[in-house]
Image (cartoon, rainbow, N blue to C red; front, side, top):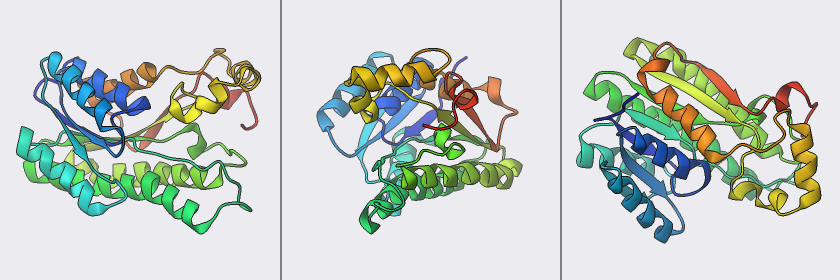
Length: 255
């Protein structure tokens, strides 16, 4: 598989799953626009790693909850590399709060970063893909919790459920333009968002026991799936979510 000559935008691209996606897309030859908000030093190092692979890379500090900042990501990709072929809506946050506990500020932050950014990221990328011609790929990083309840993390589940229907509806709407929209739904992944669990041996063992494969996913395993979906091998897949969860959704009533 080769993505040589393709240009990808990855939101939340300098940490966790996003960082792994950037590197794997680059290994397959894509030029990358890396969105980040914090830790610019890690973003600069990531740019260097991508360039060392022979690809183009540019970091853009952008708040994905802002439509204007999302447009800046699109404009930067076109200015630097001439086009947008792959849009990965990856940025996400959670509050780990229930229906009874969640504040208005917490709700708005989660929905803005997780769902609003994916909606307008999809919209703006699709407009550019239609303008330039040739179709494209939009990949939404959702979660098993787009479909699977997680009591105590309600706003997060709501945002991921919204991404589920965004993926399905946008996939149908954009199919005539050969723009494919697919969700990737990870289960538990060894990233900073799960650091609390990973640092608590009891919680980690409980989680691993609930996963049929017996462990959390590595970020690189999610990235390899994203890269497959960006390539020619996934040319007949759209309006659906591919789950990478180690089998947990089939074996546990909720988490």
